[in-house]
Length: 248
Image 1 (tube, rainbow, N blue to C red):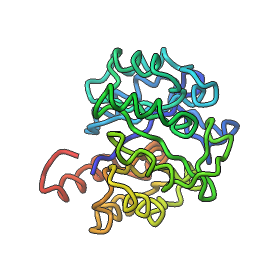
Image 2: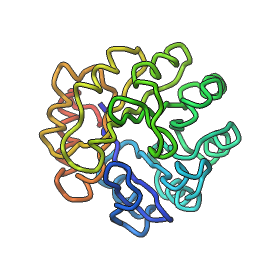
Image 3: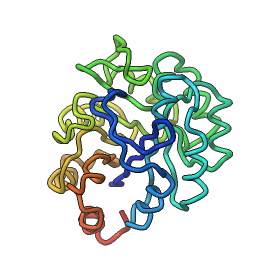
């Protein structure tokens, strides 16, 4: 299992939201590249970066901050937010992003996701964000009629590298991951699923290492890291021990 520290970008700064509400943004670092450097130094093997402004605008809005992160760290970066066409996908991959997460366009234009996955094997993920059991789009501002499982199955044979599943009701409020819904999705598809939204404590990390969560490829953590509720070295050591000593 990979533990992804999250860097959410709003107006060039590193923030955390509460349930996707842009009006409830807490700034944790004015320098996202500095934050990325810190996460790498702590031993994380991946970064999860989201252009929040881009998710609402439908195009990249924090390119400068993302560029600075890419120039600062050597670990792979997974990036989402505002990716709606192939030009954006190609541009980010050329700049060195390891994996692109496509959310809104996965609902609006599934053919685009399939083509992106065909052209860039192993480098395209689908972001599925659920609110009250339904997939939300446009930076979580709108809710579709699709369920997470229905959307996931659309891409079962598309060759996407992963699904990032976020329970919006849990995001940013430190109430724990929605393990039941996340596992239901993971069992419904063969695509690796990464859990997101609500990871709050070292106990949550331990829960992810229990046998029934073996189907999950990883989890994203944000506010709990920034608040000091999760000690990164302890969490990564637990994951490494569960892997038999492999890097987490």
